[in-house]
Length: 526
Image (cartoon, rainbow, N blue to C red):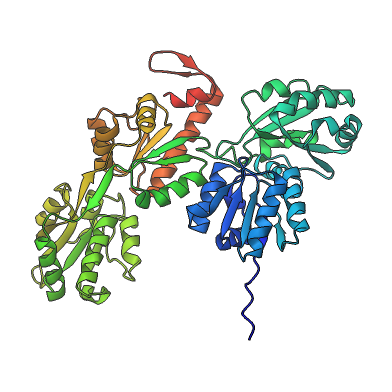
């Protein structure tokens, strides 16, 4: 009887694209997810490293390469023979990368089973993201060795159309000399793009004579677009033209709560930073909630009013403890203070009966809440599960409409621990371009654990109560949506940023001290 043969693993050389994790192909995602080990080198952008950790789910599997290409290829081949699946992450595409090709050859020589998964190159990405399409004829050159570049080859490529060159910033002076030696006019348009598709992608437009100076401050690999394609940038660029592009936005919420906000902010071009200011804990004593759950089952209430996603979560956790499900809501009407809370209810297969038609706030809900009719409403009691520090607006308003209200503490909000020192310093010194407040408690707690945001930080508040609290703490509220929802809050901030950019385009902006400032710094001043 022969023993079962151990399956042989594979080495997958994964082109990850230029930096935006959203450009990873499905095959790349599968390779990372299925890998027993994920190798990467120092050139891989941190955004892709973090994405790989999330996709694979095991941080320990990610290994930084310290070996030579030959040794690394042999190491991965040996691991594959032992049955491991390896994902080797490569910036951009694999084959233009000299070191990656050396690793592939070494793995092949060891007779490893390997695959090469293509990825978008820096040149392709810049053409799309920075708005410089290649035209009918485009030549792409990836410079590994500047000394091997032929001036006449480059000059001929520019005569026939656009030229895209991927090079290290340390080679730009030599590249300029090569262009001029090949007979390229010093006035030929050149665009230099750094951190292609990244959160800080930046493109400068200059000429062959001046692009080295224009690229001061860039680091690592850059992409040069030379020739006719540069002229299209002003009309076609979109990545850097998003309303919040490059803005560092502080979100004082827990990671769980801030996830949707962060994703939406990234779509607008912002760089979100999540700082927990509130921790949610159960009530100190469970008696109130126990009575409330019993009252729901016994038909004690005509309405339940949810004022937050946390209150929905607290009720459902109690339901689970008692073996209850959505049927316990039979005959009960449900009101929600806004769409975000309503969506949390809908996740459990229930459609709320009542939401504000205007402002999504306590006042907005009270405007549409029906008064108690002693004849039609056999039950005249409302359950209001909420935080321990909630305002009395709803209780008072419902009571004025003839309802008896059981105001129950469903959860407690406590102040979180202070953030790291560098975050605190950035908050107080103006290191954040904007801060988004989604409740009065986020205002109070952020100030309590980290101090007041700098006066040049744009303050956006989700609703009137939050705005009032911010004003009480001496903050200037710059943006506030008509409807109290996260999407509307971010849209209000985006509109404010667009207005600032328009003002900047019209001329210098005056600070409160009467100083005139121009350039990106001016966006920090009102």
